[in-house]
Image 1 (spheres, rainbow, N blue to C red):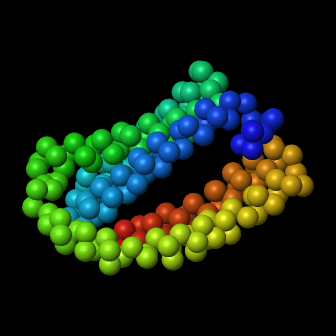
Image 2: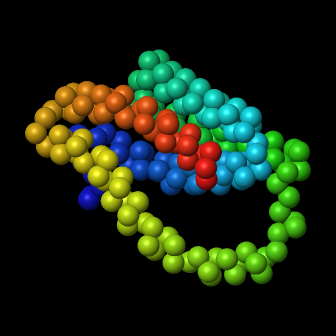
Length: 174
């Protein structure tokens, strides 16, 4: 009853996709970081192109032809699924992802060594994301949905170049 909002129809269906999408994004980022460390930049670019194509096409098709309310989330789910499967299939096919040589003792020692990292990083990451979205959240109080949608769209268009440059530099130096 606390998650229900009368203006959102089928909200429970939307909440069911969130754990799947979170898991897929985590797996995709892990494989993407591994490809970055191994200098598979061409594979990373193919994966990103496939991901964005699948997200965009799915969202357009679901929105235009089927008028699904969950089309945006389903688009992200399908896009991340396709890109994760591409990375995973390539790495398994070329036997680049060989986990049999990993030392489990060293892995568990590193888990114990860095176990406090999520505790100290979670709150600043949450506050950073909240600070970025704060204008849109506060605009939702005084304006109707359509106006907030336009504000959100203009915000995304304005911030897109800096995000693109920041991610490119982050992948290059990380």
